[in-house]
Each structure stands twice: as C-alpha cells, then as structure tokens.
Length: 150
Image (tube, rainbow, N blue to C red; front, side):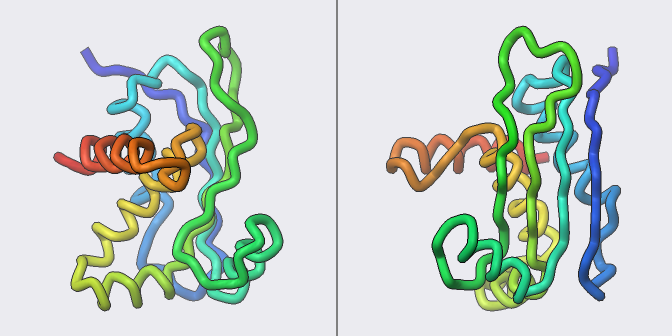
C-alpha cells in the first residue's frame, strides 16, 4: 500500500543556476518525511536557492555569523501530536555556488551534496541541532544517512 505524503512545498530559485529543479528537492524532502515517519502530518516547507551575498547577509543578520555558508534553516513552528491541519515548519536557504565549491574541494558529487544539504536543512526545521552536543551531532548524522541511503 502506498503511503500518501502531505507536503505543501514552495520552491524559489533566486540564482542564475538552473541545475536543480523543484522536483529534485521535493523528492528528497518527501523521502525524509517518509523515513522519519511523518507521513500523517500535513507539512509546509519553503526551499530557496540564493546567491552568496544573500546567504551571508542572512547568516550575519539572524545567526550573528559574518561568513558564507551553504545552507540555513529557519524553523517556524514545531510539530505536535495533535496537529491536523497544515503545519508550516519553516524555510531552507541553500547557496548553490558555495555548495558547488565545497563539493569540488571535498571531491563529492554536487547532486549528492545538494541532497545532503536539503536533508540537513529539513532536519534543522524539525528541531535537530548538531551544534548542541556530540550526541546530537551523531543522531543527526545517523538520520541523514538513513534518509539518503537508497
């Protein structure tokens, strides 16, 4: 029996880079929702591709870090057991130009890297935070691997 996954997905590409489509990110987030057992939730997620200048500005403004990064997540609300309607869990911002440079430097396929950034950002929206402790980092890494393994 096929599970129905309810996902209200908004995608915006504010860059000239058209390498990645809405469908690419939708499939990854949908898989994450399924692997995390959240199929019965009606979730809303926004994913935005932005340039280096924009993501650096956001990183400085909202996180106090004046540096370039590849992904930022901004949670809007937590999911509770009684949620029945649409729950807007937040926004993910990915900088493809920085992600491509990092993938090249680390000798990683760019599609795999973009998929990982999407999962990483999604987990942050769901409350996971690798910066809190080593235990949290390991838990988040384990979930990323679970989601990204075919």
